[in-house]
Image (tube, rainbow over all chains, first blue to last red; front, side):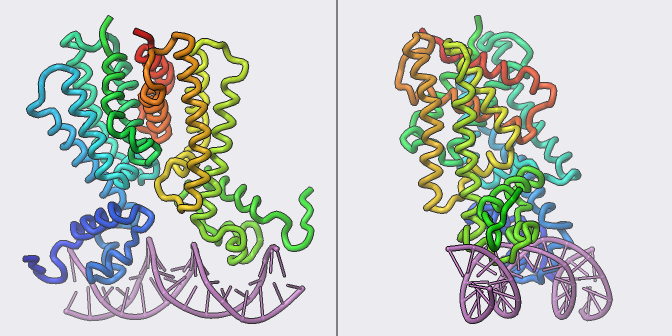
Length: 197
Length: 197
DNA sequence: ACCTGAACACCGTTCAAGT
DNA sequence: ACCTGAACACCGTTCAAGT
């Protein structure tokens, strides 16, 4: 199936793919460029042609993660009702699902230490996602289902609640029995907090 | 001042102290046992007498962090009014202050990968803090300032909002101008969401 | 009991040299 | 253009040996 034109074919994407797999399976601490190269069957110096250093590979992984996150969030809004409650619930569920399925990757995405070049692209990807979120709140306001006020300020507490719940779930700080109704409770309380009047 | 009885005196606590300093100044990635030993003026093998391996030192750091966190949260409740709003505000502020002042440490505390022996002690420390938090909510209910219901379920969305806001602040995902009123907005929205009826 | 010295197997990164 | 081979300076960890 895999056609290696000359030396390898597409080392960069195979590096990314393998890196993400070990990220998922063994955590970010266990990610070694040399091991990656070994598994792929290439010399220890080969990766450096495509990623300046290890951080560059991590940055690429994070960027890729944000893009898929954007897509997942956008997809969650398709074929769902128009009410704010339904749309928020769908988005919250997409958020938490992504977080659970990509725990180590999410950690990377929201980690502080990114190179300067990367944080530009990362900032853009994060911005695209925040635009989706702000759009949801703004539409809720237009429909009169969310209270008035500057959209960023109304959105922040909502964002904090979703992000916090996702983070708590992923880091295992939640009593397991709570995962059953936890998100429902969070969404319900956000709706209560957002309501007009 | 420092009296070195024979070989060093108190290597374990000097290791912890230095480790936390580099954690704060250069992040968790830059923490090296060998460098620590070098700075202290001790052989590379010396640390292993006191911490079985690197993870054990990280565990000890995290545990220590939780203890100080517990204290800071408890201290925030002293000399503050009795209303739920005031007490919640004080606790939220203590939470975020600690998070900002100890970003890398907090990351460690809420990180997934702890050894099994450590996670027992860590779980206990995390439990003590959650007891404080649940106590706050329960008292709010007793005073009729927080709506009724199982205290863990009422508390979870509140906890998620605080934790999420702290995490967003620390990871720099918040537009800087928002840090001025962000926490006020979060606390206000939590109060709205918690209110009875 | 506490630490040293030396060793082992591993890193990330660089750079000449090969194809 | 893409990769290899070899080297460099660093790791964490172990273990005999010293005090």
